[in-house]
Image 1 (cartoon, rainbow, N blue to C red):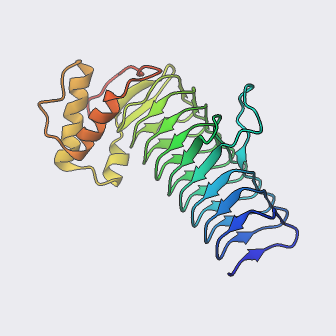
Image 2 (tube, helix red, strand yellow; image 1 turned 135 degrees about the vertical axis):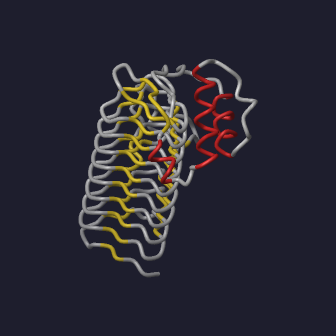
Length: 257
């Protein structure tokens, strides 16, 4: 097994490191940690107990994974997890906490990019290929879909949901749910229009885009979506709307696209 571990790093006895893992100076990897092949743990980064990490993740200096939940009722002896997929990037100062309940999970899927000093709280779920800009902070039990972009300084109240392919304008505060495929921002936050740029980059164009545009006009007028062609995106939207919200939905300003 080929590994590159700096002599000043601390690796606990029962931590499991895969092949071709790199660990930088003064990094700390505690017990009950699994790190997949090809991961990089930067200088002074810390991986605390009960973290499972897939392959190809990059942890930059001073990032911390697996901290105790910021929940005054949490008992430190609780065995809960932070579970991470593959090929994520965690920049300097990033933090993520494990879950609050026995055997519960905070989960980050694959291909995400978390910029400086962003934070994922306990019991959250982050989908694939989502980006957090600098200083994004989300509360506990937040669910964020795949292909979401969170602008700098965004803060999210606990139990909110942010649907797939949404984009949140920088410095926005969210205390309700964000509908998939939408651009949201302002004070108070409002859905403005479809996330045109993000959808184009994802290949959601032509008739697929037109169906979404029609869907949001219908939603704005509180009408059924059943008359529209059942595209993959419309199915995702219907399934997301069918889940009962714990926080309610941010309002519309304009959903024409």
